Structures are given as structure tokens and as C-alpha cells.
Amino acid sequence: MRAQATRLGIRQIDNILPVTISSHDYPAGCSLAHSFGLPLTLPLRPHLAVDSQAQVSIRANDIALSRSYIDGISIQNQIKGRICALILSGKSLIVQVDCGTTLLAEITPGACRDMALQEGEVIYCLIKTHSIAYLTELDALPYQRVISHGDGHYYLNTAG
Image (cartoon, rainbow, N blue to C red; front, side, top):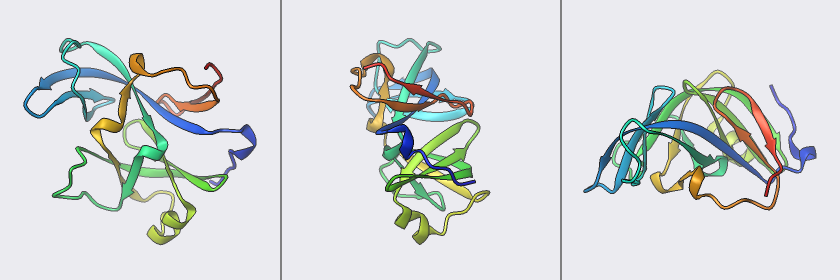
């Protein structure tokens, strides 16, 4: 499935995920959580109680893709999923990945070509811990963005 998103004037695509805080690892400087059964390593927020709920945002262009799990890398979140769609968006390509929830990753068409990505293939979404933002800490953005709520639905947010 190929679609175009350029006519919407989209400048940023965010993945919004509800998370449940599992624990805090003070020596490692991170909070551990899960979302839709996925374990996530988040920036440390000790004021969030264990078992409390929060929402986090991950920009699509902060998600890198790999064909396999990578050992010996500093990226803490390597989430396995299956490519659902490749969507042309201006000079970028949006890769829709089903990993128990839907994640959108933004890559270049050249990267897609070099990796020979196709719908239905298994892929890993690589997300640095510090590229994950808690929604309560985000400043309002002065432009439109598409938000994936992880349930396969996308919303145009014009607040900002």
C-alpha cells in the first residue's frame, strides 16, 4: 500500500503511546515501562510512581530501522515488528510497523531502497531512550502534526 501525505502539509509525525511505569533504575538513569505489552526504557522520571500511567511521544524521524536485533549498541529500545505499509511523504518515506501497537518510522526513500524493505517483512524499530518525550513535558508545537495513537488510527493535531 503506497499513499501520499504531502498534501496535508505534515511537518512532523509523532507516535503517542500510553505507558505504565514498571520501575526506576537510578544507576542506569532510566525508568522502565511497558506499552501494549512492549517493554520500553524511558528517560528517568522518579516522580512517576510505579504502576502509574503516562503518555510518551516518539517522533517518527527518531526511529531507525534494522533487519535484525543488534548486540553491542547503546540504543536501549529495539522493538520487533512487521511492516504494514510504506507511505511516500514528500522526500521521506513513512514505514508503518505493527509491533503489538503501530509505530511510524520516517526514513529516506534511499534507505528503503538500500534495505529493500517490503510490506510483510520483519523489522526492528530502534529508539534511543532520550528521544522519548513525556507528553506533559512537551511544548506546544506551532505547526500541524500527525499523531499515531498506537491503535492504527491517526489524528491531525493543529493545536500549537
